[in-house]
Length: 77
Image (cartoon, rainbow, N blue to C red; front, side, top):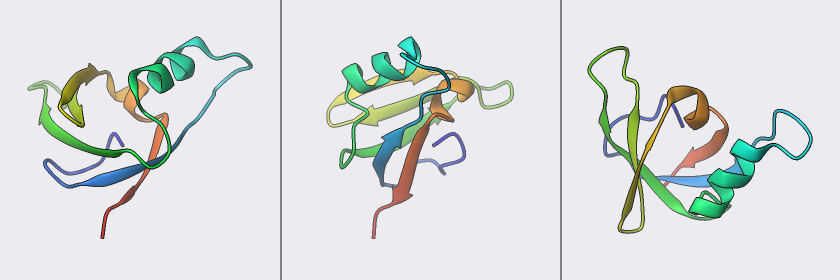
């Protein structure tokens, strides 16, 4: 998701765990980054595009690019 263009709708496929019982991946899932959820990037930080402001439904989250890289997406048709 870290490379998704601004305001392009995408669908969450999965959140990748980088280790067993990954707490960051679990937190992302708790926040709503689950398969089938529509998501879009609504803003990027001024320095290196970090952080990203991501919207799921009516809720917006600021994610570091490293966190966003764990969220696998597909662009909505």
